[in-house]
Length: 198
Image 1 (cartoon, rainbow, N blue to C red):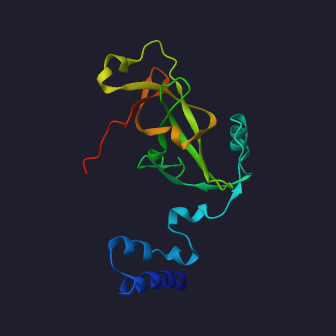
Image 2: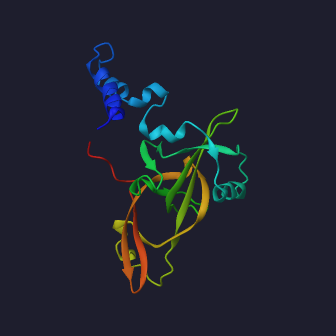
Image 3: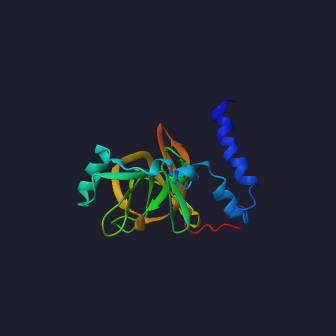
């Protein structure tokens, strides 16, 4: 433990013991953040304060939907949609599992790769770069015998990156890896009807 650790710990302890700053649990949590002095709200937002160039793969996906956005974006790791917390796959694989509406009307499972926030003159825009799971190319889905489960088999491979709006994200999903013969699939169930017991 060197001086850097002691300096960071001192910030926490000073705020913890200062009665002027305390008052509620929420206040305590916010004021105990060492990032407050840099104007950053939380550790999760550390990479969201500066814009960076959009990766080429993402730029191509944006162009394919004819979206007009700045050339730089804030890359976020988390976003809350419909009261649910979603994350990019590199940060939290489980929270990156999103059911996304499609042109056919049937929601499809996808993995969130990037969350892009654009500062535009009118209003900030947020898009998600996702990779949808490919449909399972099988003659028979073994889960079709159990409609009450509302589970469907999807290929374990992911499609190319595409851009979706936050309004297209419907819910989380759970998946179970399934091996049929020498092929890998995912049994997917939407969590849109699952409610927390709290």
